[in-house]
Length: 185
Image (cartoon, one colour):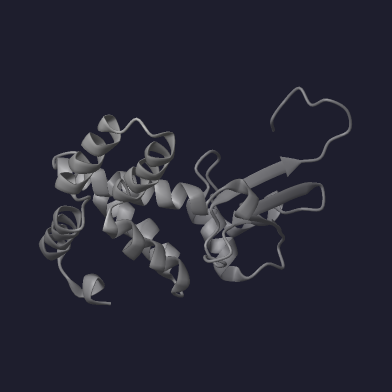
């Protein structure tokens, strides 16, 4: 809630603080690498490898993971990443934070976690409006055009994430024809 009331400059500064202050402990990492290089005992090497894995996970990722538990938390992180991308092009600290958010979202948005739902003319108006707004391949020009695309000989589906049940992620539109069509129209 605090982040959402900040202006753009405040948000960028907050993200820079998160990136810088909650990054990996470089000194501890260097020390663990040196200890692992020096040891010859296989059991110690395995243990130090586990220590290295833990040290390579920045503390900020634990914080970011907690958003999955909040209502609208996943959507918040998706929107946060959209803001973060342009800033990360100019700031290496923010680039690392962006990659942390990207990895987290990639694991949450695995196709196995997505729910495929059919969209019909009887679907909620808010969903139909999003289909009209988000369609990027063949623009929907009117409600009549939308209704035509949802006729009985057509199928429209949307993928949803369980933590973002009202936000379609991907649309798939199919027209049913007899035989192999030679024309998209």
